Length: 275
Image (cartoon, rainbow, N blue to C red; front, side, top):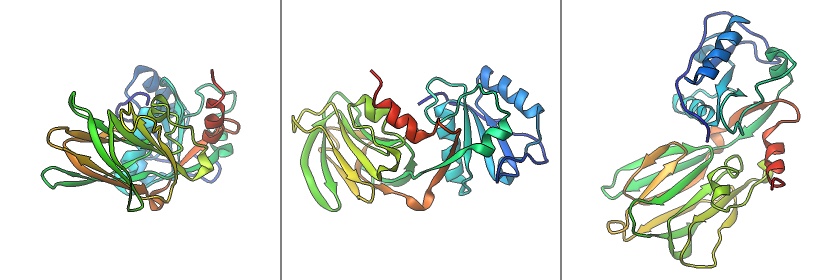
């Protein structure tokens, strides 16, 4: 989703917005985002990200995801208020407003988003763990169809799924790749996960499942050498996998800030009526 890029942060001092007394400012490397950041930075005092209690993120959904992942990797997560200067801006707020930025942040509604924790094992036995805010996707690496065993809570539900791939999406990510793969849109407070096949061949009539978000989901790659599969957790990829396990990481919950009337759950409802 959206654009990617580096960041810019500013000086010392403090900016006050509601309960947030120390704000950091980050912007993607696009010209539009950098110009907006220069104007906003000149209008107030900002602190480095490591000293802030909230961060203003300027760019698109991709840069917001990059920022959230960086905070998860650093082990210090603070609320994020996005300003959309990207393409879609599903995780962001509108760039234009008659209200001052500090006032917008003071009035913003906090929305909790819990990421997926994904552990994958490769053919060689290497094991890696990543977090995904939108979705975890398993994708065939070659022209050969992927063959996957699908288990939920330790029980095999599909012994052999032949497909281009399969994904598990959070409510926050259900309108991204999941929707493009004909998966269901999940309301933000639904506490559900979407398990969605990508171009399934067999079972021919299986179109996916909606699972409680406390479910433990596992995939085993069948004929892994002949039919290699990669796994992608948002923006991080691992190739030649043999097994993937995932579940919601409630202890790593993130907070997004939205203007009243433009919150993420409202956008998810609105998306279901677009034609």
